[in-house]
Image (cartoon, one colour):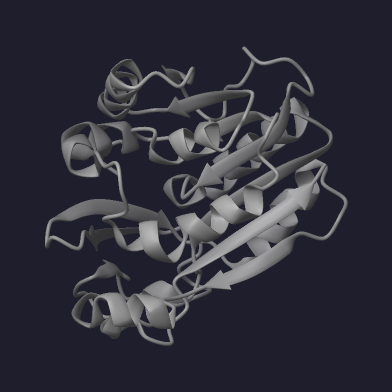
Length: 251
């Protein structure tokens, strides 16, 4: 991986700025993940891989007591800070690595979210991050995250509105392999994304190794009839295909 994740987002940060849904997953994933975060009122929340703050702002607007946003991209965090200055919500953002949470106390948060973070790190780093999440999450607190559906890259050709390059590997042989990709906005702009491929086993085993003992709730997310009705041209190529996975587990 010649270009770091931070570099990739530093050069594309402008195309991620938004105040309303514009990207595929803004319609097909984030609203569901946000609903799973309820109740949010009064919660202390850590948003890992927060980007320019799109999801963090919604958490704060729904009543979170505090929201801490972390991302490795300076330009994305600059965008989040600019949005905070323009319309203050009391969110604190910083450039940092999700695997290094030593600034936070044990059991400091009620809710930790990671919306499309783990597809940017390999299996070893995901394990480190999840162990740190377990540490900073209070007993009974919730950990909610979303990732591309593990099989999605193998179902969709390299074309709009979303794809990953498979590099001629299969579902199991491609484990921990980097797939570069693109995601389209509804206005036709596309932005770079990437996925370090993981299987379902990887997520379940890594959660258990981090210390979580309960069984996570898992939801397969896809384009809904309302999306097809809203914009058939954009969503029709993904009709009846698994797009994302959402996980929710209590400490």
